[in-house]
Amino acid sequence: MAYIEFQDVKKIYKTGDVEVHALDGTDFSIEKGELCVILGQSGAGKTTLLNILGGMDTLTSGTVLLDGQEISAFREKELANYRRSDVGFVFQFYNLIPNLTAIENVEMASQLVKDPMDPEEILEDVGLSDRKKNFPAQLSGGEQQRVAIARAVAKNPKLLLCDEPTGALDYQTGKSILRLLARLCTERNMTVVIITHNSTLAAMANRVIRIKNGKIVSNEVNENPMSVEEIEW
Image 1: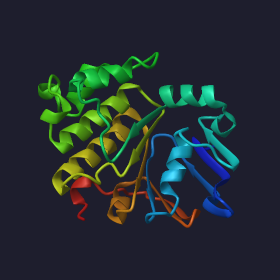
Image 2 (image 1 turned 90 degrees about the vertical axis):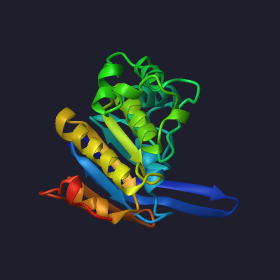
Image 3 (image 1 turned 90 degrees about the horizontal axis):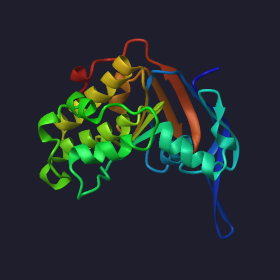
């Protein structure tokens, strides 16, 4: 069995008499420790897929499994525990708490779980040990995104979900964030899923899943991922 499995997943939103099939019989799998890029244009169903995988939304029908657990059968309390313990989230906009320093933002996440990583060590890993006492407003966009990644990783999650993590960043800063995500996969065997519309990021992934109109168009394993340095966009 794969580490992550979506089996015939459907998500239907109803607005009055209109039904929108955000996911329309979605099937795919991802192995542990893979860096997976999910590609699709706006409205393709990427964010719905990510929200269901992260336990932030429920599905209409089908099955979702992570590490042998059927998360699609979880009730609200189980979903809350799953979000808190098993999943790290990194969004396009950093969602840091403005009146907490970088280290305090990371410490707050580490206090949510039983087996966290050391916040000081994680901030050093993301190259911010000299900025740990700074508040978000005193940090650049790239630094704030690195704090957001450190905060997600501090929980020692099974799964790191990234929604357009470089979307608000300049080219060089975006590359440094991607380098960091790739390193988390190789050094910590963390499963990282990035959703994006930037198809050039596919070259760095172990697995590339393309989604269109709520359906999986392709699910390809990349035997020779490029280093982030070689990628241009």
